[in-house]
Image (cartoon, rainbow, N blue to C red):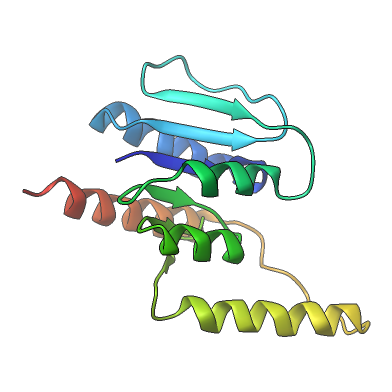
Amino acid sequence: MKIWVDADGCPNPVKEILYRAAERLAIPLILVANRPMRVPRSAHIRTVQVPGGFDAADEHIAQQVEAGDLVITGDIPLAAQVLARGAHAMDTRGGLFSEDTIQERLTMRSVLEQLRGGGVVTGGPSSYGPSDRLAFANQLDRFLSRRSRP
């Protein structure tokens, strides 16, 4: 299993949690972004810089992910592609995407895009805070614990 990170929009506290998990459990962690990143020196952590462009990081992850891998992303279409390939997807607030809910989330995303396109202000996500960090850390620990059991 590898952990892939859609790193362009990933909050720094999430990256820090992932760095520690990769080291502690010796899990390959790959951060994909369209700009250079600084990460801790580690045999388990690497970065991939993709060319600039709309969804270039998403496309790279979608092409490289394998069944059983975990992808950290807030991008719902990427999560859908990941699930279709037999991998797992989690958002940066600890929410797991699932086959049962992904279509509903894609539909809601589409509706909100149409509203924004029509000039309706729909707002955005709340700022990332300590409770989000804790929810992510707890969900990641639960997920990794289930994966490491025989």
